[in-house]
Image (cartoon, rainbow, N blue to C red):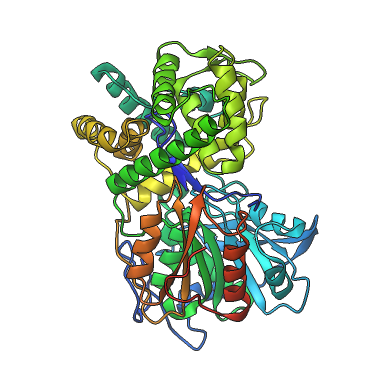
Length: 517
């Protein structure tokens, strides 16, 4: 999941797991399930169990063709599920065939909003994403959600404009800066509407979940088997609420609770990133050569001082396209990127060492990774463009600048390093020009099979408490705890976690209550 770590205008932290694997209303009668965003759950009609006016989508056959180590196809879905006879779009799909006798398909999503499921699934062919037993038993299937990368991608700004937008001030201190941030947020949203047309109103998580059920049918599976990481857990829980009886083996790793508000999200992530940064600084100090100081408190204070310094006077960078200065916005993204995976901590050590001596290149390298940006200034994906489009449809936010000033002070009390910037995270949706169609709602998925919920105790982007929350709220939720650092747990280095998840996906074995790794 992406967090609120960009500029105040773009502030919304990315909620994705490691993508390389390392580590609208229904028109038919609903059956029992959870309502989500005003949409009735699991629709039925005729023998096929799908609304008659959606049958042409549910009955479609996928035309697979070779694409590297995978097979690729397109899936046709309606732009607006309330108007299935209207415009359609094509979603990019890929499949890495099982190495053994396939039991069916396992659909995977790395998070975002905006992460490419096609790229994520393709990595399974190289030994990432899932374990060997899962690869043997399932075709691993990915899709780029509507509005993402190869699936009618949302476009707002060109590369140079995007560079400027992401590099803006994430902690507007003065009233003038705050008004500028609001203006920039509105301008970005207006550009998205102008360039993306009607689709900008239809990239909500509910619609993505409905697309996923069309995909399930096209794959020939009676139930959906699914691995969702980070924001992908929100897609998964939304699907489970809409179609509880179609839930197969479901793994939700790095949870975004469907009933959490925008303000709760910002505060939870502020606490999570503060905790993760403290863990990082402890590591740094333990090396004996930490550029931030010789104690935890000194190191945290030095990071805050550094961010204030680059806010006032950005550091020179070279070899990064049109970006020539490391601003507070870019520096924040660079630090955030390293919090997602502790294997990046030595890289951050070196980046701080260089930046404190006036060279921002290494920290900018990390920021580029966060933004899916190449060193020549081009963007390999559109995660930073589609992020707000999805988030702002799912949850409305206030345009009241005074409320963000108040939240910045409140957040800073519990997260002095990350609190202020994450408090301003809702501003992008506060100024978003398209009215939200969703709202935070509790999902129980009553009638579903067992759902495996995985939480990491020091996860920066999706705090462990969120996993506990969803596992408790689900009617058939089962929590697996990983005592560790970084974002998400499966295929991130823990043999214990991997074994439990693999056994669940392949054999249906649910871990004992209280299971921890």
